[in-house]
Amino acid sequence: MSTKHIFDSQSIALDNALRSANALNPTLCVDIPRGIVYDTRPPSPHRSVSVVAGGGSGHNPCHENLVGKGLLQASVSGHIFASPSSSQIVQAIERTPSHHAILLIINQYTGDRLNFNLAAQRARHTGRIVHTVTVGDDVSLPPTAIAKVGRRGLTANPLTCKVAAAAAERGLDIDSVRRIAEAVAQNVATIGASPEHCHLPGRSAAEAHTHPDTYVELGLGIHNEPGAKTVKDDTSPTKLIGDMLRSTLTSPYVDFKDGDKVILVVNNLGGLSLLELYAVVGVASDLLSKEHNMKPMRTLADSFMTSLNMPGFSLSLVNVTAADGLVRDTGVSILELLHDPTTVSAWPEMGGTLSDYESAGCMKHEGLVRRDAKMQEHSPPHRMVQAVPSTQDTSTRRQLIAAIITSACDAVLAVEPDLTRWDTVAGDGDCGTTLSSGATALKGALQRDEIPLHSYKELFHALSIVVETSMGGTAGALFALYFGAFANAVEEDVADGARKALDQLKLFTSARVGDRTLMDALIPFCNHLNHGVMYAAQQATKGAENTATMTATLGRAAYCTGNDDSLTVPDPGATGVSAILMGIAECFQN
Ligand SMILES: Nc1ncnc2c1ncn2[C@@H]1O[C@H](COP(=O)(O)OP(=O)(O)O)[C@@H](O)[C@H]1O
Ligand SMILES: O=C[C@H](O)COP(=O)(O)O
Image 1 (cartoon, rainbow, N blue to C red):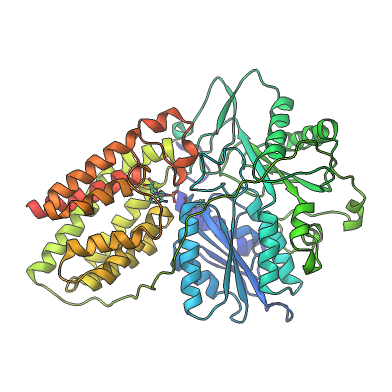
Image 2 (cartoon, rainbow, N blue to C red; image 1 turned 180 degrees about the vertical axis):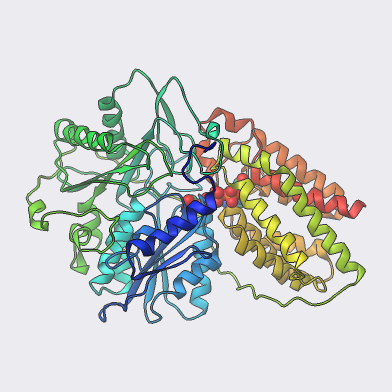
């Protein structure tokens, strides 16, 4: 076991973890290739809403182990730490009762937002009613640092799933269920801490970050991005937990007023001993009482949103009074919904009756803090990309296009190790795998003669579909959107098609040159195409190199700006795109 895991291969671990959903609850069906788990029981007759959620794998029980009566109707999982593709999500929606409206609960990460919103649009085209709620609860970074990406989605996601699904199970309509989900999502403040990062199955154990003189990293995400702060060895657990509680109570994101009722959630990030998890609960409860005169209405301690084997925890405070205030007209309370029964074994037994907790005290908290509105990227409507059949075309143009695609794919496969290393420093480590999955799928489709080469429109439609189904993550969604827009725009002038497709892509992402994303390579390429493909590709390469000194404001890297190393490595997405473009240009030269 050179990688120090029981499962050395990510795909074997993922497939078997998915399979567990059915083993633990035989009423669930598992579609392993599509990463979907869904409930096969006939829904209660009074129900009109299904709640569906998902995201990258590696966060169990999110989300495949949260499907079942009283919780999710279906879940959909991508590769480790990478969003599922929009077609996977559409198929998860299709596994819900056809007369149900859908609430899609989206974790606030770029890939998830792009792919889930695209899927919502596609499902609406087929006549389904789909509403979305995006969840972000991290308080570790200031509003200025995350102005464009928004707060990361952490423990608030499964809490929102539980409460929304309970509302659906009670027969509430889609508007009420969505509003209840939003009310919870907006009123959770979370911060994480861990002495070590997590370690991906199949990767060398030496790749896990270690910090010999560090007690913990504070303000960690769930994808191995470094903490917002490093806490040195001389700090005690009481001081650490006290600081974390203060961060949640005084953050600019959630207001906590005197007398507000709260729920405390202590979340195991995946690898913390249960002894230590419960010790955190003890210290946190004591500090809330002594320092803040607070007794939570309810305290939950379990694994809700994990990060593989990360040996740390996160603390969340939910402002129940504020959330209830937003949805009083629905006639239900957040606490009741949290307490409603579920057959999902991964959800902790609530124990006791609701009234056992009603008499618990309220909080008193002196500081009054303001909520800052969070900024989010806008996702406009997108036309659905149609699959096209392959044709037999043996012309010279066909051979040239095939050679260009092969050269572009080989170029990105060659830089994969660098992309993985750089994304590990300034992201979540999956960019190399995501791009190489796309390249391998495209080469395979080409070899099987599944890529139509006789028409640019059909070619780009097919490219969009192959990358969309094989990549996932932020890069997969952006590539699919770009190729899809290319297919719509292109006539005989390919350079003109490239520029028009870029204009369309800009509607889906606010990233421009200077934001440290793949747009730093793509924009100069499109802008210089009138000077020849090689010159344009060289400009893309320069653009990608320039990202090494840029500060990211978008994507996962935006959460890593405190990590000095991230300033010295180029953006992996931009480097991948420049490698692809150079691969294309070299083919033209030859
Ligand atoms: N909002 C954005 N717009 C354009 N490109 C982005 C954006 N966010 C991230 N990226 C690009 O995506 C790359 C990461 O892709 P990927 O690994 O698929 O992301 P993730 O794992 O976060 O989904 C980054 O290196 C960056 O170039
Ligand atoms: O687990 C990871 C997230 O759910 C997916 O987000 P991402 O595609 O933006 O990395």
